[in-house]
Length: 257
Ligand code: NDP
Ligand code: 8X3
Image (cartoon, rainbow, N blue to C red; front, side, top):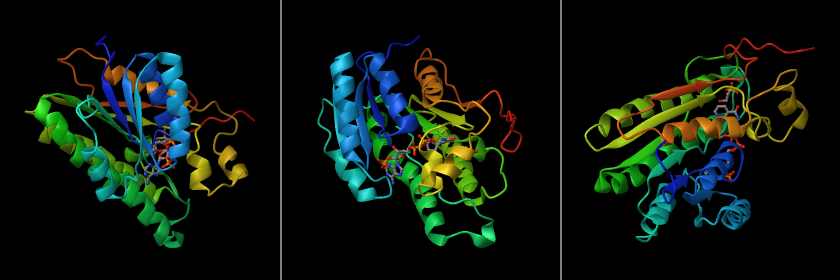
């Protein structure tokens, strides 16, 4: 396993779920972390806990990935101790709504497209030059099974995750001669705040998503991210798809009654 001790990991959406679990697993490996997200108080709490527990260094930056200038300012503000980013985890993302396309809300679509597609492209555009300068680095995108197969009412969310898949493949081609790894970790059902966000705080609807089965935990996904990040230098993990044992596809789920 390639050591991650002392490496700099830049995580988008580190305030919750998979991003937070990635922060924890890389902290255990003694990596230093740039933690970003909109809910900066949450990130600061995570940062404090991880610094105390693992004696690592962290930097917290408020970033809304939909705002190109905000990301640019944040990346430009990193001094020489922080701008040698070894791994970028493009995790920030969300689903909004669960309707037939003809009942969908424009605002929900705009938010998903702006965050999941444009946000990932913006962050990659601004961080990659730092990696290219050093001729090394690793971009790990959090895709989804929804980027491999569609499901009823998934429409625009699925489209954004198909776009993440296209971006992962495109970035891999574009940096082929730059010594940079590009991986995609694509989970099925993971119990995080994802469904609560999708259903705008409706706890009943959110918990029904995982009813009768054991979903993936964010830690399960973070382990896959860590696996991608820790391979020997000559190896690139292109894609990992992981689902709960009880999920065979986006539509085939076995629930205990
Ligand atoms: P959570 O809702 O728990 O976490 C989402 C994270 O994304 C939060 O930290 C949130 O931070 C951040 N985020 C959302 N919008 C923005 C924004 N505009 N700018 C910056 N950060 C933002 O959900 P998950 O952990 O499940 O989601 C993480 C990723 O995993 C997403 O890309 C999602 O599509 C993907 N995924 C999730 C699956 C699941 O079943 N849960 C399955 C497959 C993929 P903050 O609000 O503080 O900005
Ligand atoms: C999240 C997985 O199936 O809820 O990307 O769309 S799913």
